[in-house]
Amino acid sequence: MIKEIYATKQTLTEMSIPKNIPIRPADNRLLESIVGHEAVHQGIIAVCHPLSNPDLNQILRNLKDADKALLVVLDQVSDPRNIGAILRSSVAFGASAVIIPEAGSPAETGTMAKAASGALDLIPLVRVSNLARTLDMLKKTDFWCVGMDGYARDTIGKNKLPKRCALVMGAEDGMRDLTKKSCDMLVKLPMNPAIESLNVSIATAVAMYEWMR
Image 1 (cartoon, helix red, strand yellow):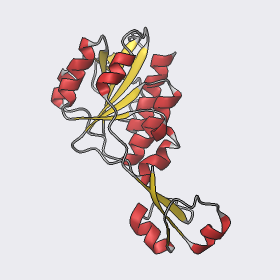
Image 2: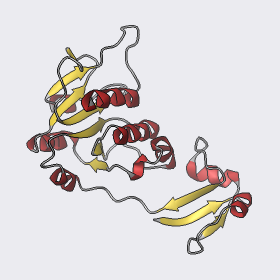
Image 3: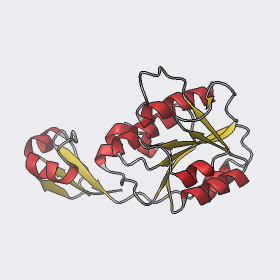
């Protein structure tokens, strides 16, 4: 829900804004101080109430009888642009939720929303207090936890990914040891050895495509 709108005078003359929303005149310097210099605001920003944290238990109940379901679990992914891109790909490839740890994960900022291109409103972004415990809970609801690890022995295409799959992704430094130990299996992408790794958002999209097909 929108709390208030900040906009330049030029933008206000070009747009129709509902009268029940408070409007604050602003210049570009003020807008950039709110959303950051990298955000593309086009002369207007909306300040919204924070999104409520989706209920993972309810999501799992909804998926209880699903023959095929995908969850994306991110460990130590701290760049909001990467999470935004993963949200967008998750919607495209049919994932039911993206799960991130509360500690160390960025807030749902304008930067994340822009990278998600609308997906932030289309898929639950679930924050959990303990990732290893969450993976154990997913296993108890018939999800196979598949970790993407560049040092894994098997490649992702060697065996078909499970239909009920929790795809676990790490950041540049990979998953934490406890997260890795909580996975049922570890796989890697088949890659040219000249390149050590891919950006996590790209690697996640490739893995989700392999699951979907």
